[in-house]
Length: 167
Image (cartoon, rainbow, N blue to C red; front, side, top):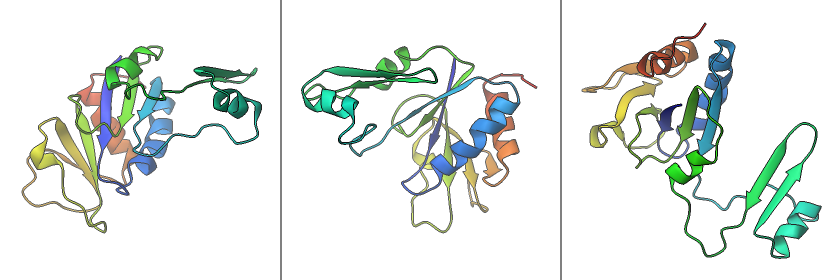
């Protein structure tokens, strides 16, 4: 399973790129899974629902299953946040695992950079950022620059880098 990261400052458009990139890759026959890191508390069920009540009653894990999907909710309580490696171990293998966030990890990454956001470019300080996808030119960049609005070009770069030859 190939692992590739999408990083950038908050509000840079990482998720926006991913929701365009995933169908582009799957249309080319690439099996894709994702892991997203957030600094916010994750809530995946709703107050009043049975699964929520199970969790709030003290269940360590709650699984919800139907004919179309299943979900496992794990309460960490006072346990440390799992590492990226521990999270990856919980996934079934696919062609490409896209990681949103986890910018301090050591996998290869593409940085999303928008000129209209007041943000600092991460690439100069991270040798694992192997390209930048931006909405405009960037002076003095030492890695490839890809047009952020050309999802096909972003997909081409990721597939080529990961040596994934699909349709």
